[in-house]
Every structure is written in structure tokens, then in C-alpha cells.
Amino acid sequence: MITAMYRKIGAIAEDETPTAGMYNDALFAGNALIKEWMALGIHVWTEEEAILFFQLGQNRYLLGGTGTGGTGPDNCTDANSWVPMQVAIPVSGGATSVTVNTIIAPNGVTVANGNYFGVVLDSGVAFWTTVNGAPVGNVITLAAAIPAGQSASAQNNAFAYATKIVRPLKVPRARQIYYQGGQSGPRLTPMTVLSRKEYMDLPNPLDPGISTQFFYTPQLVSGEFYPWPNPQNANFGARLTWYRPLMDLTTPANTADIPQEWLNGLMWNLAVEMAPEFDVPPPRWQMIAQMAATKLELIQGFDRESEPIYFGMGYDEARR
Image 1 (spheres, rainbow, N blue to C red):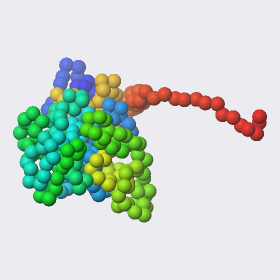
Image 2 (image 1 turned 135 degrees about the vertical axis):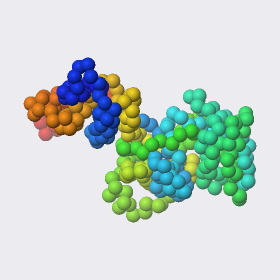
Image 3 (image 1 turned 180 degrees about the vertical axis):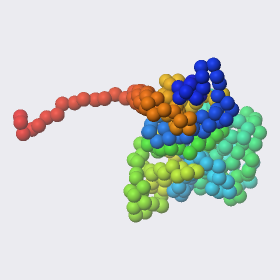
Image 4 (image 1 turned 90 degrees about the horizontal axis):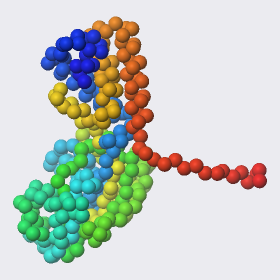
């Protein structure tokens, strides 16, 4: 693609190949262009679902990023990559293992060494640690002990997952989750999206209750998700629809994080980005720019979800 782009702007001949420096320059310009395209709006191949595990009394959740020491991302993972469980044998403070009813999710995901593991304590707080070693049967060994003075009764909810999501560009939709009975399936209730003003103007943002609304802001390092009312215990969470960033190109051998139907458009638009660096004559540059605009319009028209459109009859009582 990079070689074809350089031919289009006349930087190389048909039988030539770009230099290593030309490749690196094109990668930099390509990454900048792809990042700019993230501002175009929805990209259907980057629209994903995630599970955010609530914590009792916590009104702000950090999504993505790499901070540590209490500033790192909260517990949020792909909606199809976690294991819902229940405590099978009660545990008390100081316990370093938990026996659960299963270690396999209905879709086949299994608890593994190093997974994040959370269990809802009788106080309503979720205790989070990691799995220390492969489970033995349904017994999960913990990297940290259950806090002193705390306990988890039989049938309390527990969760495990492997990887946290990256920072979402947007969270256009969310549903509140109530974990009812382990793998019997969570109960979902749609949440209302709030603007920053609407959330910040709430008179009692820390009031506990069942979360029915949310506000999300992407920020620079970690996105911030604010549910309202404040989660009343860790038996609730949110299933998020989120837009992930487009991944960078790091070497010329990488595959671009776009569908195949976008490749031609990427090549022509990359030619527009690179043309000024090679003194492309204005007539040729204008032709390339027009072709790039046409290609981008075409692929943007294809980048839409398949959604039904409903029509109905309108009645005017005054004319009857």
C-alpha cells in the first residue's frame, strides 16, 4: 500500500521501492491520518461491548490507561470474556482460596492463572485480587487474602476475567446489570446518557441507589465513567457499548486496523498527506485530493450498522 501510494504521487518509479526513511515517514503520516479518522464518528468494526464491575459507593470509574497506585483502570473487560460464578463454601477474613460453583462460563471462557478475580463480600463491597496458579477443581487460590473482619457467604457473586479494556473513545449506550444467581444470566436495564452539565448539576451525585443514568468523558489517559445513583453494592454493574481506538501501525509489515474495503481509501488519502513533502505539481495534487475525497465518501457510506427504518401514518384530527 505504501509503495503504491508513493507511485501515485510520483515519488518513485514503477520498478523502485521506497527507502527505509520513506517507509517510516509514511507510517507516521498513516498513524496520524488514522487517528484523525477516529473523529469521523462510528466505525462499526470498533464498536464493542464491555462489562464494568461496580463497587459499593464508587461514583467514578477509570477505563483504560496504565496508572498504578490506586490511579490505574478499574475492573472493566470484554463482555464475552469473563466468568460469572458464585461462592460454594463460605469464606472468612484471612482466607487465601475460594471454592466456587464453576470455573467455566457458559461460552467456554475458563478461570486461569493471573486472571483478575473479584468476590462480593457480605458487606456489599467487592474484594479484588488475582488468581494465584491454575484452579484445582473449583478451588481458586488468591494472590491476596480476604480482608480481616470480612466474609463471603455461599451464593455470593464472584467474577474472573483476563484483560482490561483500553480507553474508550465514546460510550454511547449502557445498561445496568444485576447479577442474579451466577450463570442464570444477568438482568439488564437500559441506562440514560447524561451530558457533563446534566451530571455535574445533580444535587446529590453521591446518593446510593440503583444506577439508571451515566456520564462518560474520554480524557487523555483513562476515560471516566460516572453512574448515577451511586452503586449501592457490588452486585450491580454496567454493560457498555464502547468505541475502541484504531490501533497504530508500527512496521510496514503491519495490517491496518481497518476492513479491507477501507484500504484503497487509506492509500489515496495517505497520498494527499504525503504529496506536499515531495513537491507534487498542483494539478496532480488536486487530482489525488479529489480521488481521495471520493474514496473516503464511499467508504463512510458503507460504515453503517444494519438498522431497520420504521414508517407510520400521521393523523391530523383537525382535518378529519
